[in-house]
Image (tube, rainbow, N blue to C red; front, top):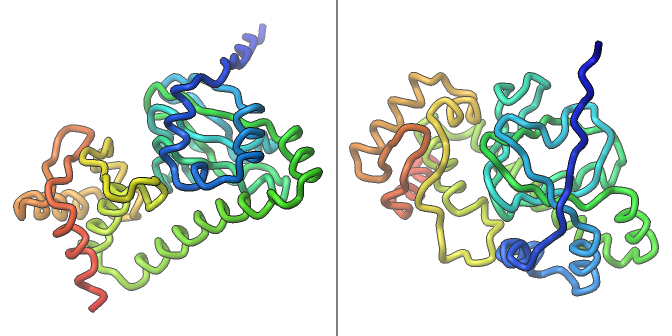
Length: 245
């Protein structure tokens, strides 16, 4: 006898969720009408560690944002231990690609810890955007922000040595990939294991460990189990840029 799949339950958007969303540069700069439409359609889903938001091949379900916790984006349907592409934390948005081409999902997204995710359902959002086509441009800007990050990652893969790639990725993550409104604030603690960082950069765990130990000895980071602390972001950033000169 087949075990029934539990129904997904949602809760309404709360005022404290708006504060989180407005801390992100993209949402903060949206036209009022679009921001109101997104929040009006939004619903909140709570995820357990290891639970999927969606899987590769799933039909598009809309636009998403992280409100709490950490999500893991992987390139193959191998569960939360698939090939890691990136980690997402609040107030990151994702899922916008399928708004444009309405194709099936191309990646897996899992929660790696208890997380809260905002979802704007696909059908009503597309209907509203088609009725108000002037608001497609802000959606395209979200897509281009992600494209720039992807191109930068490909460039790093091609031109930087492994130590510089590690330093640059840590600095970029500490700065929330430039997506946070307040660029003067950085994230001091990254909830990222050495194994996750190695998989993200396609490096061996041994190589990654050696690089991180060197950065720790030089006073730029401090390592803990399952996380690391940024001690000197400026020096870390300079170390990442050294190979470009």
